[in-house]
View 1 (cartoon, rainbow, N blue to C red):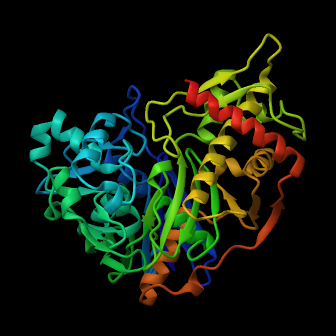
View 2 (cartoon, rainbow, N blue to C red; view 1 turned 135 degrees about the vertical axis):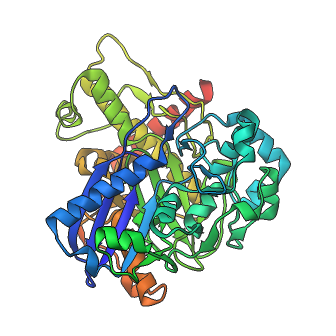
View 3 (cartoon, rainbow, N blue to C red; view 1 turned 90 degrees about the horizontal axis):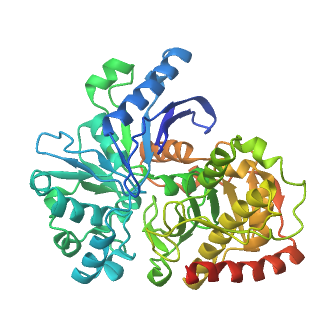
Length: 478
């Protein structure tokens, strides 16, 4: 048996799989949220541990003795967060999260200090870890001086599980301190942020064994004493592992944020358009991502404004969308990464009249996210990665009408997996299985069977191409 733990922004999801990768148990527990003024976003790492313990209790209650059969644990989690520890591994302050935009000024300063684009392979963006640390150095200097180690969120979970400070390549690449091509910490990039390699965790590949479970936790939860904890992956790389998007293929994710993901055999950055170029979770492989910070969360926002739940709101739409809405929506509720790298970008509706109704607004939101994903597809194409088809995943992918809109806008064929469970927790369990087996084995990372294929409509794609050009000008004119 293998346990996958995925630390999400809103909750922790746990899966147990058997040797054939069938799911035999699962559990979910929410993570407490903290209300802060935009653009701040923080969480208490102890709340992550509480959520994981709650999920473990669910599995123990439903499947007594199952955890004792687990041979390996894989970890996944939201990227870029800054967990600051003192010399005794005490958390110094709440984690500054991936969607926190407070460090916009620090981005410009770091860009001038070192070759983050060339070595780190990515633009210095406020959501990444490095500018957060420069912000702490400037605004909380006493706190900064106490830092003994900086961990990413899932690696703080690993510290709780094992007592060891370890990170893996896919998540470490999102700190901006990694030499992404060389898959090692960069002393020059760390120095630009006032840090050293001594304050960084040890690095492993995602399919490697990083440590073993602490004896105390083995006794508390009934795990075997030699349980391995794999390197794991950042959330998107873990989801890719769950879908077999390891050496080829692509996926589009409609979660809180939106992602277009494709693996590459070499390190191929495109910093001019805000493409994320990171290490993959398996050795000798990289990936490119286009990222928008608000996707399905835009629907949640509109539902709250309209006083409906999302499902009821979608019923306002006709069964078939024949073309673009007369209303345009910029989906930048929490800024934007690809292609503009603008943490202060704002969302807005355009083209409303006295005749505009709720259905127009719902369609505009679906299309606005689709246009933003089209920006990502175009940015990856400029970096040498053409996407003709992609798996569709994430909570938003359950809305088939939205997938048709995205297929039409992006002119990409979307594949819906036959089974629903190919997310980050499943990928983490696969990485645990690989670590127990001794390392990366392509046979462990097969692609899912396809339940449905959504083809783009040529006529609508042409109409959306013109609408996308108009939509792009709205940001330029803002």
